[in-house]
Length: 180
Image (cartoon, rainbow, N blue to C red; front, top):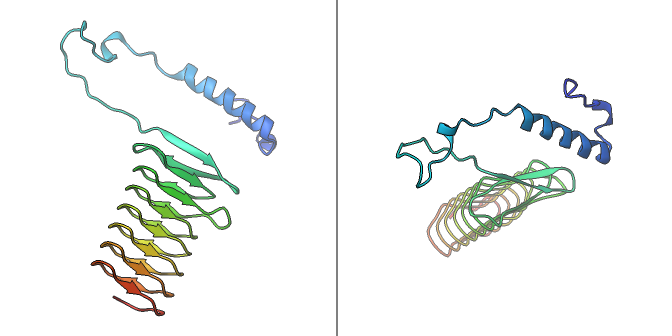
């Protein structure tokens, strides 16, 4: 940062931060090597030659109450808000906790992680809504009390403190430390 002329002590000022980011982006753009004609993507008019296809996954950041969440775009529509929040991919997933942060959705579709240190690994329509909850996958599963876990299956709910549903369908673990 210092080599780029950025004054680290002024980074808390949002106007200066924005200006510094613009300066850094411009310098990074200037330092990128210019592509050689043979490295550019082949068109119908160019000679038939196989080139390795490498595509960077774009990153989208949503400003959170205490920091930024990070989404690597799958097919889009993901929303991350809060400190240390991550969405790995998929579509229409939500990970947000502006109070404590640190929740994760690995992928899948229409999943929600809302508690501190809550995780939805994948699947579809799953919810980890309280602190330290986990849904590993499957569909329409809910972990809704602290430390509750649903390993998979369909339409299962872990609604007791530390309750676990291993899998299957339409199961509910209601008591504290209950296992189904």
